[in-house]
Image (cartoon, rainbow, N blue to C red; front, top):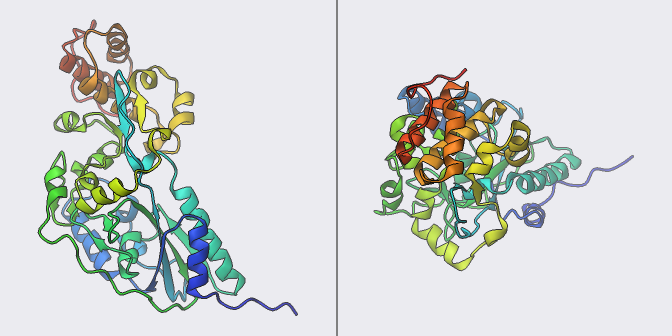
Length: 358
């Protein structure tokens, strides 16, 4: 008869996590995440979800580890750093990509968590991995596991490291005692993240209005509100401003300059707007693109072009005319806005306003 190996010690699992780049592995008791559940309901009821699904879609499920793993006893939470340096901006109109979206950092995180889950399953326990999905509120689990505290920007702050981490969990029937107490708040009176937000989306310490958060505005389908377009600046996907303003994050970045210019931190806006659908999905398909429709990338790129382009550049004028006179009302309206901002008199009918998604 084949004998199962014993349930591994937490130290063994932490060594396994490190092999996959997971720097922190904490333990929380499996229990309903009541505080997060209440916050999700209250903020959704207050309209702060901005139409976002994710953990807002079903707060009662995303805060209940027993929904997916009946009999769960522990939640192992992993944190993997994604910090990288900002390479110099190339010449010409280019769009900035937030650090977390430059490389699929969830791939090594999931790989490490799956290795941990496989080790637990080999010992006869159930184990299910959650990472970047709507199955579990990882930040609350990470807080309960003693990995960090909630910063005023609502991201989890790892002591001495800031918030440059992706998080994931393994919910398991194996029983582990929490090894670390929850981390006390380390923000004090600092409010630099609130002041740095380009749209004032951090409406209270730890409370973000998703409808004003540029990271979500750039992912959400539909027309971008005119008031949000200038604050978008050169961003095409994600926003790092609140984290970049955070003193621990700044200090960590100064000590650990990251991978630098090898990462795709900038996207050529005109190249993007001239590319076909297949090319765009091949290049940027790792991002969350609503409905897998490249029109939303083009919409974002038109806003960036309006903020960073030159109205005297012939190629820019041709791209704007192409979209302004095209069949897509949303893209035509954003192209008209960009042309007006750059002082370009686009040939064609009068500018359309308030285009609606097809």
